[in-house]
Image 1: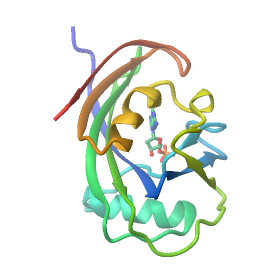
Image 2: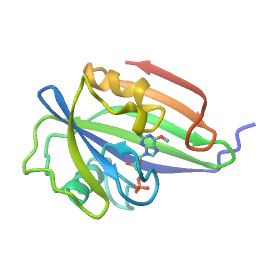
Image 3: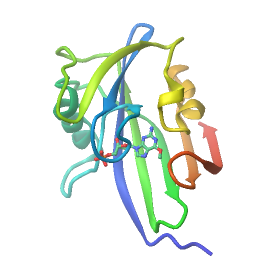
Amino acid sequence: VRSTTSRKVLTLVIIRKGSDILLGMKKRGFGAGKWNGFGGKVEPGETILEAAKRELQEECHLRSDSLREVGLIEFEFKGDPVLEETHVLTSDVFEGEPKETEEMRPQWFSIDNIPYHQMWLGDKYWLPLLIQGEQFKGYFLFEGEEKILNYELKTS
Ligand code: 6OG
C-alpha cells in the first residue's frame, strides 16, 4: 500500500574544486549537526536550477551559473506521508569564497576524507557516484534519521 500523499521538491548542491568537495555543517533545522550539500525547498514559480542557485548563495555565498543536475533521489521516512524528491546538482565552476551563514558552516573536504560518519546515512551510497562523474537515481526509506530500511540506487 502506497501511503505517500504528497511530494516535496528539494535541491542539494555539491560544489567541487579539484579533488575537494564543499560541504556545510547544518547549524539549525532539518539535519542539524550533519555535513551536507547546500539546498532546500523549491519555491512556487521557481525552477529547480533557480532554487539550487538561490540556496547555494543564501547558505554559503557562492554563485554558480554552471550547476548541472546529476542525480534524483526520493527520500521517504517511515510513517511520514511526504516523499522528498531531491534533485542533486553539481559544478566545479563558481564565483566567490564560501562564507559561514546562520544556516551553514562551509568547509572543503578531500574526496579521500569525506566525513560520512557525520552525514546522512544514504550519502555514502550515492555521493561516490557523483564524485565519479556518474548520473544516478535513487530511493531511500528511512526509519527515523539514523536507520535505512531499504534503498535502491542505479546509474544511468
Ligand atoms: P531545508 O529543510 O533545510 O532543506 N536532505 C537530505 N540530504 C541528504 N544528504 N540526505 C537526506 O536523507 C536528506 N533529506 C533532505 C535536502 C533540507 C536539505 O536537506 C537535504 C535539502 O538540501 C534523508 O530547507
